[in-house]
Length: 80
Image (tube, one colour):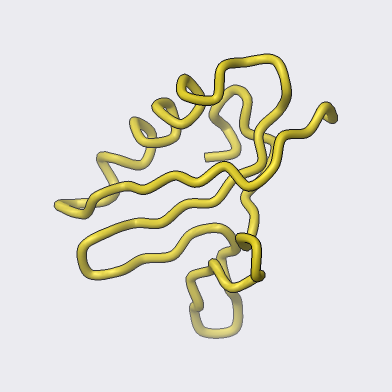
């Protein structure tokens, strides 16, 4: 997801709880559920947010199986 143009970083969501927990580590900003994949990102200022969200969905779609992909933009930043 961070390889998508316009995505600055994955985020843990407004309460810091969005993550997938694996043995010995976690993946912040991605939460896998039975019927959905929830992704939280910070985006760079300058590109239309709907375009960035569509690119993230497109990148994750082939990996999500039959799950819906929900993308939430938690922050907009002007940093690289």
